[in-house]
Length: 552
Image 1 (cartoon, rainbow, N blue to C red):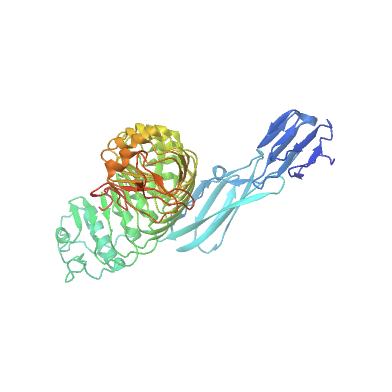
Image 2 (cartoon, one colour):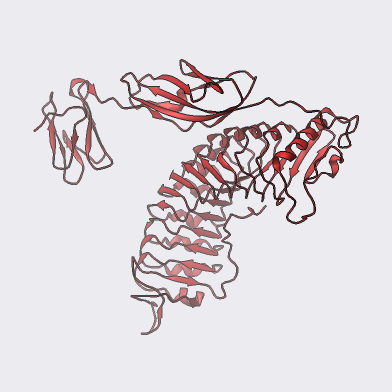
């Protein structure tokens, strides 16, 4: 039997002997490990000093010896979260950031840091201790690579992009003009100039509904007559230009409209990134950039918009993680980020948004577990996390969402059983848990959801019989249970109530529980028994592709 040494890998059926105690560490045939009368399926950690031993099970089923006596395995540092892209202004003070919160070491080792810029002609990077300093040199873009190293020489990196922009200079183009005649406030003159110059960047080609018009922002026209612009004597407070064939990029100078409360540029063909400068709009209540062709990451700076009530960025091509900073938007009522290419985990910080009514993160590439913190959102009515790669069980904390009307978790990798407490969410009108890996029986408690109109549980691994109590769901239009492993018979009350049972191609049949021979309900085998039930007449569904209210 070999001696246990740091770094030794053991597989089922193999053993090693502690060099000090002589006790064997044995990997059992079932994949568990035994040492000193302790048996574990994940980690062995016993003894102290010269007698200590630590072994941890790996993803492939093997076990790695991490510590024997005073000798332990050095593990590499790990990145924490993601450092968001930075936008700097040429001529401003250098920017600083503490790198320590962005890295951790599993052994508790002290880390050293360094940074390098991909283009020192645009931005220079230096580190003192753990503090990164970025110094602007010229307008342009670069990437900064940040490295954390432990005393053993192991390291990891985080890379982020930096954009250096020219400082805003008021053009004065509108001073004493028709748009802002003599006596207009300095703020209104400034805002007029910003929008006159923005008109060229937006490249409007005419409105889809009014093809003879063009974007009429001109110093030779009164600002009160500008399309989609609302202004007060103190400045522009609203821009609402939608479905207007706008092309080009969103001008970063819009971030200087300090009185702006509403920015809506939806249903256009805008490209490029969301400007970091929009995070300067401290009075903004509505940011609606939906249905464009925007790319890049969601700027961290949007977390500065403390008065924001609506954030609608869906139907774009945004990438990267959802910024943790969005958890600062304590006044937010609606967050729509669905139908992008966002990745990573759902930030725990979203649980801070206690006023949130609608949260739509579906149709992205999100992974990891559903955060327990979402259970803090007790005002939530619509939760859509569908069409992602989320895993794990449905968290028990969601039982607190007593105002929830729609819960859409379909097309993920969720496992575990369907929680019984879902039956206590009395306001639910739609429950869609289909196309996951859920197991166990259909909870009879779902029959308490008397307002439920849509119930989708198909394409899971559910077992057991169909509860007859589901016949209490008198408001239901659609009930889908197909592609599971259900057994038994179909409760007569369901067939009688729903009336129209769709016949599918089938190999086996589930009889009605009290049916005579030949009176059977549509189903088929394959991966499992399938059953599709519709109410008759089917009536309208509330299964919108976006969540409720997202058409605005």
